[in-house]
Every structure is written in C-alpha cells, then in structure tokens.
Length: 165
Image (cartoon, rainbow, N blue to C red; front, side, top):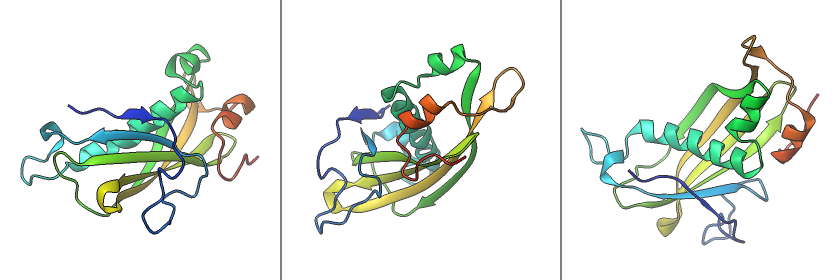
C-alpha cells in the first residue's frame, strides 16, 4: 500500500500553471502519495472514499510530528487531539498510479479545538481532487473532556488565523 511521504516545501509547490494558489496558507505542510491498486474501490476502479479520510488523518499526524507535537509528546501529558468532525468535498476521481500532493494547514486555533484544512491536488493536470476541513478537539485522556491547548502547541502549528481566546 502506498503511504503519505512528507515533502520538503518548495516555492510554487501549491500553485497551478495559471499562478493560482491551492492553499491560502503561505507555509502549508505538504506530503505526497502515488496511488496503488490497494487503494481502489472494489466496485469501480477509482480511489475508495475511505482512503481520503486516511489521508486527512495521516497528513495531520505528519504535520504534528514535523512541528514537534508527536503522539508520544501528547500522551506524556495525558492529552491528545481527537477528530470531532470531518467535512469532505470530493471534487474529482483519482486513479491507480496518480501522483498526488496532500497539503494541510491549521486554519484556526481556539481554547480547546482547532480547524484544519486539507487540499488534495493532482499536479499533472492541475486538478483539485478533494478539499476538506477537520475539527480537532484537544482532550484530557484522564477525564475525556476538552482541555486547554497549551500556548506552545498552539503556536507550533502556525495557524492561519492566529490564536483565539
């Protein structure tokens, strides 16, 4: 099975041939993946919808790791981010052997939650195949209740809209 691989940010990596940016964030986290047969639907030979959700989760974890907020760091504090909501817009089909860029950024950071946005792009034909928003809740693992996101964690993610009280 193909896996998401972090990509070093390159100038213009998320700009189409017409010069239009695919991300509003000046420094999105970017990963890449090439589709293989294990990611296809059994009924129709295009990427299964579940794979998109895996990409959303996977790129978020890669981004968190890149900014030092690994699962082990969070677990040592008895805290973790949980998905509260996914909003996924499937805009185009993906096929076996397609090479995709998966870019993500944190849109906003609040006291106990954050909105993350993701775009999946097929660069060979400038196609945005998916746009998604995910609401992440920061949770105290002992109480299973929302917890305040520490300032160091909030600032590490470089939220597009900055921190909100």
